[in-house]
Length: 303
Image 1 (cartoon, rainbow, N blue to C red):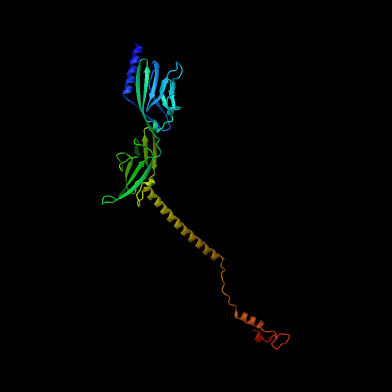
Image 2 (spheres, helix red, strand yellow):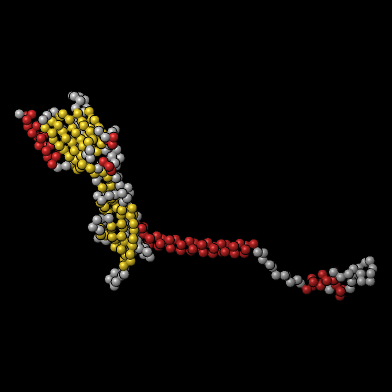
């Protein structure tokens, strides 16, 4: 009775699987496994796999041994692996492997079918983001702003790629397909990085636009304004420092000159009598040409 219930459960499961193909996704160069959910109590005679043509036949090898697989086409040779529960794995996938796969499982006197729909995807590369800006005329109640649009795209993404942006706020809006982000940017807004993430069924990849690229021509954001202010202050301090150094150097040189220049003394006026005596002493020794000087002996000449 228990075995009968297990068989009925197996038949119901396989019939449901046949009616509703199972969706599977694989990556180029990767592998994918087709699960059959065959239980150990089932007496499997063979599993016949087909897709665009015959792929392989799997037959049991006895207790304790893995099933034997016989590949029919060169396309799948060396790429097929069968587990002990008859699940089939295909490796080194390519775009040509996409399509519908069918497994006909022979159990006793019954053949049950399970179908799979395999889609092959490429691993996403890093997205690229294009930045565009457009000035908006200011009004009496608006100090002026610009609209910045960020357009995200990814190479070889296919049709089933979705995009998302972070962060989002009251100044941002997203297009219906999420690949375009619009930003209402105003001077003085705090700097903000924005990240685009592309996703497909097997992978995702992101790219971040730095804040210094989110601006409009002729308008500075808060970080640029801050940097400009700092540069102006630094420039003023440098100029003032140079002037102060120049003034100090000139002052020091003037002090040095004052210390090294000698002070000229005015000539000292001599006593008239002393000058008269010196003049008498400086006269020629003997006006008549004698050898001995003529020395005045009278009292009047001496006085």
